[in-house]
Image (tube, rainbow, N blue to C red):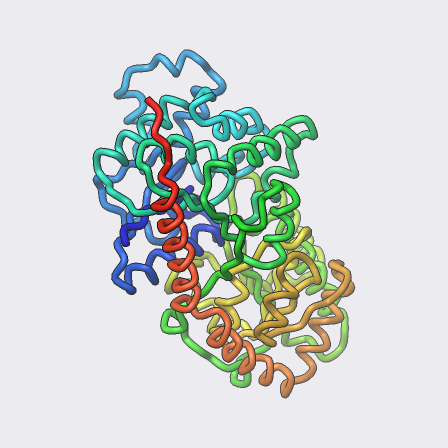
Length: 440
């Protein structure tokens, strides 16, 4: 089967769970002898951009579409201006600046993206579709998330193949918008969903969220968990490690970096935890500078700077080094997440997790048994949970082993990829029974 994945890139400036999910599925599908073509949008892809053919451009270049949205004169700019703005080095540089990966201020652009051929980005859409028609012959097209639904109609119409759409954390983007824009976006996503054959949520929890938000018919919605390949990770039991608490995700307010730092400060005020250290990794964008400056100042005020490490590298080798040194990980995301692939990466490496009872965290931890869930997402509650787990080496060791076993049993990427292929095959069969009607 020839599968085309359309994937928004993060530019590699921070740990991007959605980018990692797409990357791991692509590798697993290729290992199963399927042909997978990755089409990047907005920014270069995270971690594995070297895997992209140089002949595949980055469509909807973030700089170009932003300037065209804000300054209409750029819509009439010569093609060489677009080529310059969409050059991968320029786009990667743009990913480091404030506003490149947040919804606030980009409401109008989000609406126009969802409008597809009805919106101001219609020329970009036609450019992408023309390239796909000329260069690819897919059996199925897979959109990385529902914010790309504006592409679905033209893709299905021009290629005459089914369009599949993953669902992960769209609400994180949409729900921070001003109310009028938020309502418009959810309505548009619901309307554009008619052009998608199947939706795939990354967890049972999130399937319920999006079924409600987008009014998706039950027959078009299924859940396929994210998976990891255990061969990509080094299993290192916690029994031989120093007591180090880890954080791995984009270091920002939304992901609760400050909650973990405050919990660490509270923990360090208790006797018996003098040796415990904190390791933070996952990168950041320009929007996070103030947040990180406040964290550094707080640590300095409590004389803890020397006991906290900001681990710079979080891709491949850097990730393995991080996981080898930490003995427990917590990412206290303020509103929870649709999944959290970092939980699998930690547990398959033998690192227990401590997570709030939000989003899909209970679903994942309950399936693996590789961590603990705490009720209130406050520094006090997290500190108490960390104190309990760090004070019990036997429990730490049990969770370390249980977590890896749970990932092998429930979240192996090969098993999840097979489930994904089953969705593709059903969509192709359905399309064969009722072909897409092409309009001129």
